[in-house]
Length: 130
Image (tube, rainbow, N blue to C red; front, side, top):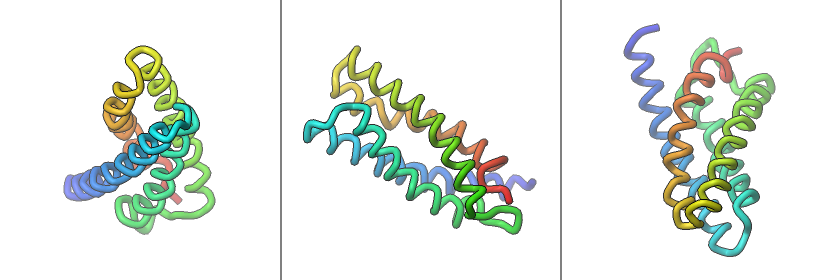
């Protein structure tokens, strides 16, 4: 694995991840602003961002002869997404209860950015492989 490939994958993952976090955060903030509770709002944001991220990372970030975007990759992605979503949702519930909704709104991008580092490694070495 060359350093150039790692840099290219990292750069694409960062760009797509920032867009994904923005989509997720926007849905979360709008949902909670209009009265939806934290758990379903976080789930709605995560699902919306994940749909974009699965496709974009499969087509741009990790695209190669050894990777794919099929059923097997989707199942792996859903398993990884479920674990990170549980972690994100627990963090948002804790933030909302301990510091209020405004704190949760501010902290959500940071929490999800931290989880994205784990997701990058899992995606690179497991999710998108054929």
